[in-house]
Length: 90
Image (cartoon, rainbow, N blue to C red; front, side, top):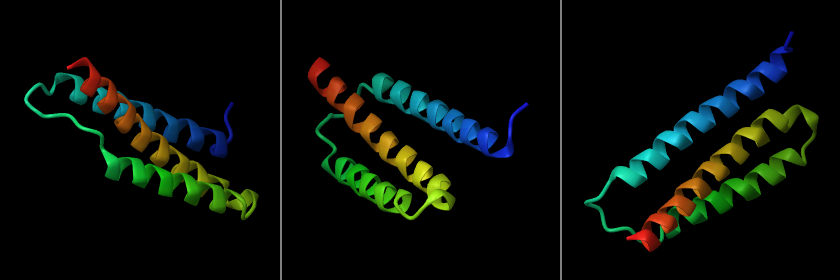
């Protein structure tokens, strides 16, 4: 049905979506915190993005590592995006 490579990508994507959803719920339910732009998380996301690009350029055998770095970058940007929404909504 699924190859082991495809199953690995599905598993990593599933973990990413579950962790992202949990983080978004945590951001929305935390009312006591003062929200500001998370510059450090944005910079970390940029570093992961650049790292994913360079690892991806190494060749097909490096694609799983590039995919993991890309998911880390996306997670950082999810945190930044929803923190900014929370900042503007009060």
